[in-house]
Image (spheres, one colour):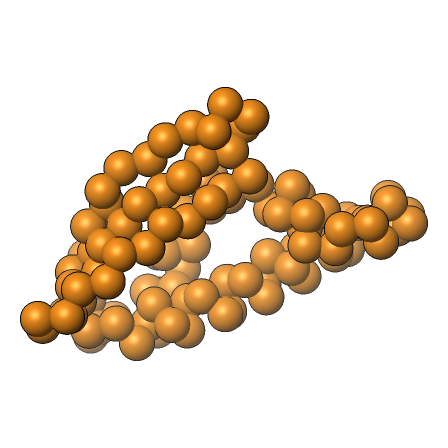
Length: 106
């Protein structure tokens, strides 16, 4: 992805959101985040909560992504857990430092 810092921040954020939009199940993530109280919400409350939770996640993560400068991110692979979840392995490089992460998506 071309993450050109000369473009305005809102344009960069919009491009990132567009790229990842179809890869997240915000309804399911919202339900998991709330846990048991999700069952007590009305349909209208759930419909109101999901976009608010999505905006919260976008703001939390996009502000961090926007601070990246020159780091390399490598996708190392993914595997299914057989129950609809997945493990995603990534590696971040910043100068000589290297970090590996595993993300679990249910």
